Structure formats: structure tokens, C-alpha cells
Length: 116
Image 1 (cartoon, rainbow, N blue to C red):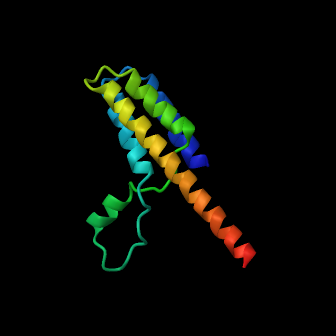
Image 2: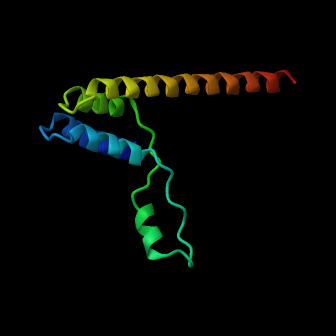
């Protein structure tokens, strides 16, 4: 939880920024936070692969993460910003629908297991 709070603080600062690329930078941060964590280093791994893995995390965004990201895009002057907000919102809704379907499936499996 501490990691997502820290990232959300950075996203909030980006959203309030006057920089032209604030929305692009905010979205890049969210994409990095959602990546799979790096695999443990092996003796055969090169130093270049170690550098690429350093920026990989696996942190689930929360509502505030999306709020900051949408705020950054909605106040951005970048061409296509409103459309980008729509894409992010649609993605967020799809993620939520998938979560609900998964939860419902798990609940159904638990009920079937209890009935057996």
C-alpha cells in the first residue's frame, strides 16, 4: 500500500503541473507500476538486462491512481487529450468488469466445493 500511495503522490503532482508533457509522463508512470516485477538475477544475466528490469514493478492502481491520471489528461493541452481520457476510463471499466467476473466465478467454485 505504501508504494501506491507514493506513486499517487507523484501522479497528483504531475496532474497539477503546468508542464506540457505531464499527462504523457503520468501515464508512463502508471504503465511502469503495473508491469511484472523483474525476475531474480541469474549468474548468466548481463548488466544490460539488469538495467531494463530495474524499472519494473507490479503495483495495482487504485481509484486515486486513475483519478490523478484522468486529471492530468483532462487538464492537458495535448491534442487528443479528451479521447485519451475516454480510452483510460473504458480500460478502467473493463478491468473492473473482469474483476467482478473473476470474483463471481471464485464464489461459485467455493459454493460448489461446499456442496460436494
